Length: 410
Image 1 (cartoon, one colour):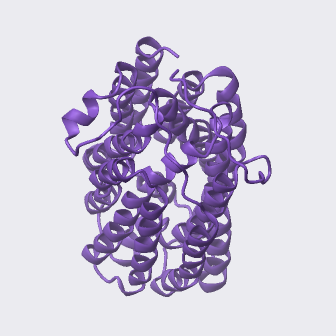
Image 2: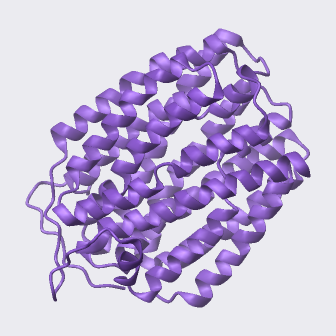
Image 3: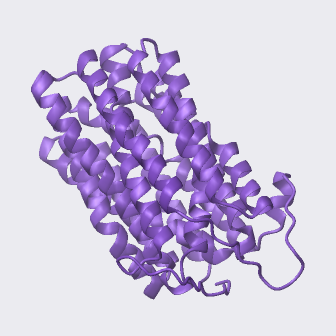
């Protein structure tokens, strides 16, 4: 594990966390309230309102998740180059906030794709620099806790957003099996406000943090992907390869939502299940981060991927509604164990002045692989059965666990 200088921040801690970590958590909380209300039901909007098939849904989901991949790499590189993180985060959150209202006007899948692309461009600008800012603002021995808190806040926002969505859906269309246009537009209108408040909190309360410099020659990155990768040690490069393998079977979560509807659940029931998923995710994230501070990141990630393989097998084989409820809860356990801990692991594997670039490469690899992953999932669903994408994902997750335990040492 790379040795990093301890953070010495004179500002008073909030809930045992540095102010930057706390307020970045608040920003993600507010942003996710908005995003869950506007974007989580996009697969149902495409299928129920616009009448799109699974190949189109897979295309929209894959491009949406992959569109920001190169931008994440670029923004991470820029944050290392200029040694500033906050300004890129502000730009990113602002772009996403401006894009969201246009979902109210969406009437074709092309418009949906365009709006999602705009939202993801914003995410591309902000994610790598924000994660680097969290790492820069965290003591090395509390990094897992900091990322766990951030994922907890992010996902708690998702819970709140989905609860509001469930209330709106219940009063506007009851327990109807399909999502209605008027219902969806109402969700968009309500979801705009918390996104705007999040940008204000970021500008007002989050401070730029000095980028740490390790001993040795000054790091002067150039925007050359091959040169970027060569500057990192072998463990980080192997981790990127294993992440790519896992992600190839981890298609857009659009297909998890469609699997629930494939079991004849109503939109209201699906939203309740998503609340269950996010509540579990939020509850697990902080304890998982703390556990990784004590036991090591690799073991926690391997445990999460193992659970993921079992959950995906469950989605493939399920035949009862009550099983879907348990699977959504288990899916939240996987996310809670892995999402924040993997980000903390990246910070462990690289020196401080390279964190922006490292997070850019990490998020970029995941984003780029999500496009073929979602297209493969859509093809498997349409060609074979709704269970096929989940068998495929479970198999690749098992291979990723083996690769992580064999090839990477902490």
